[in-house]
Image 1 (cartoon, rainbow, N blue to C red):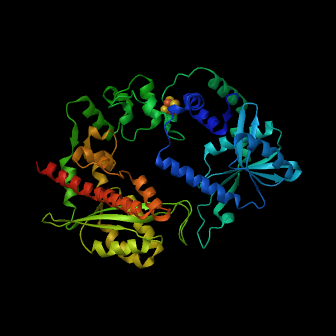
Image 2: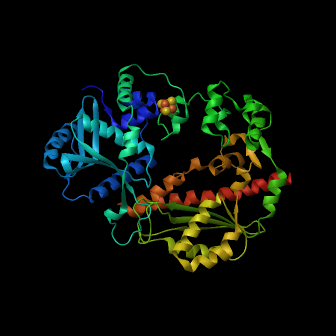
Image 3: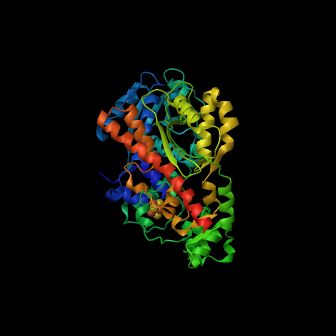
Length: 490
Ligand code: SF4
């Protein structure tokens, strides 16, 4: 069997020649997908199955092996019915269509199903490759349709597949994206057959997806390189890198660094490791009113809405951690972790209202998230609107401001202001000590043990790990504020 160019390989080839070559010739070098990526694949499969329900009397060829799929596709085409996962091998090109629909004049529409709520360029490239392959195989294609999730869909009872999707006719876009496809395909086939191409890192390493070979190609990028510049555009970073200016310390005045990037450069050039604006930090700390409530939420946002009245990808808060600190330094911890499969939002909001009392600052890290979740809660359950608007919203203080504004910056943060980057430079607390150490894993684990078929022992173990993870988020906030107080009192 010659080396094939499939639609996924074609998309990889559009991103980078080396990625294409390795995925065909040396795929063991590509690491297994992360748990989060696996979850995205699973959600995509669920959506794919749901989409087939829109088309009645279809012939399902999914689950067949490569040869059998191609053979049965030939038979299915004659029946002029919707076909799910029809496979075509034409020369060295292979593609499977999510859905093929028979239309007038002996033609077919290609339907590509996506779990996103919008049309992306990569989806159109996908369709243009499919159309090219199917036409070469002798099919007459009328339209290219992208069937994506309808962001305005609101669940009411069982999910209605007809309303859950939008079918966008993207034929014209596929025409445009398909220009020059023959030459691109030939070029990619040559790359596959040649020896491993030389590579150069570029913006494409993270666009449209973070490349799985980044660990390999970026291994020699040194600490304090231009890639650590805070919020510098990718084009600008690569412009510097490609011109041989690799380190922050070597960037010249003509680079027009902003205030924050200048701080990073100054630290990279000098002996100091930390920049501290004591006045600004002091002003921020003065705003805090006791008792101080350190708060953090965890949410899931399933593509298939779980409860009536909800939309695809709408957030469901399932957990919070709260440390309450009184003026004399006493610290108490409270937490909420939803039990059972029912909608936890009402109980979540009630517990918040019970614990947040009427006075005192509410410290969060990245207020857009916590405020957004509470605003959504108050919209879904209007009985919380007055409480949230009148008492809570104005008490929220964002600890991220201290770091986002670079009132405190440690070169050990490596250009990031996330709490995961800030905590290690200000405290001995570590996420790496935990079984669940990341927010996306916490959400996935909660979903798994709450809605999946999981034994009681495993469920309790995961819930305990979730409690520890969320508690660390607010304990981290407490520690960071305490360290900041110590710094400015020095
Ligand atoms: S990390 Fe960048 S250079 Fe390396 S294979 Fe991926 S896209 Fe290509």
